[in-house]
Length: 222
Image (cartoon, rainbow, N blue to C red; front, side):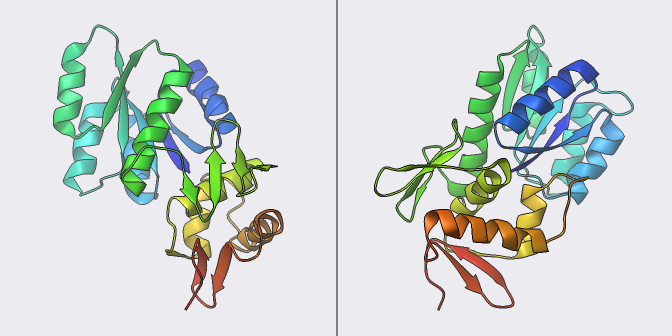
């Protein structure tokens, strides 16, 4: 899963980025409204965390402009605890959820995971596909024999995205866009390496190759 974090408080944004990395997210940063609006329109994020008090262009205006451009990416807005009017304005502008500062990182993670699952799978429960269950908190996958299989950070991001889209043909470029950050190694050929590693851990039958198109998780190719 790939996120855009829009926050002009540098110490806070850096700490949040570290926490989000640990939770298995690829994270791009923006510290002003103009850059944030551009990135939100140009990059395929799975969710955006948006502070409303931004320099150059307010977070509220940025959100309104995204929605005016038919960008439906899930957005969690960050507001001051006593600014109830910001919450109302944010929802009217198209926000999906809000969190008041200061907040506990555990609450942000819970809201973020639930929001992404609702937007991509229609539910907010545990990911269970093809006899596998993903333990997102510990970044391990549990197979049908109840064995817990450790995953690297990239393996976890890749598997989580594929489990949210079972049966879909996922191209290497699409997977790359949702697994790596803007300034990361975006060579799509690297995806082949991680697909092979997941097959070695989970079994070859779990991820099928559709030649010339990409990969299918959770069902055989035709």
